[in-house]
Picture (cartoon, rainbow, N blue to C red):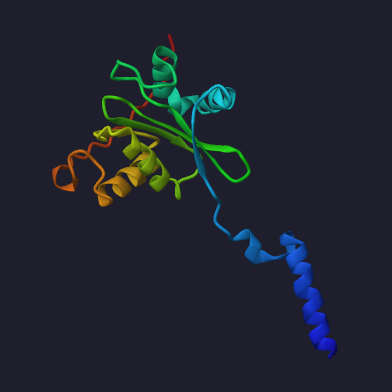
Length: 169
């Protein structure tokens, strides 16, 4: 009887305090996609400039053509992904010309959300621009889901590295 009571108290303590329950920390995060608008534009801009090394192309498109798709091929509907703590973990845009630009602090669990959002745009994904490892993972996912404009049989893979150095004068 003492053992049973001890087990019940222990399991109740784990249920009450999730920090003591190792299984409560394993649950996958929940992500949501939002269109950039006036309510979240400030947070979007903060993320852009916080990650400016990998979002420079997005900054240019955003500042030149705005947050919504227009007539220009480099315009698009900018979107952000938040986790269940309301932190922005990713931003992306499918440009009118078919290029998908992605910046993300998480490397998994967002591909399907991005793909679903892009499918609503009714623009074929012809190319992808993202940080190297993330870009490879997203492109592979898109190919396997058969969501690229050319399909996996016509893939041309080009891995490009850009080295920037400051030369002394």
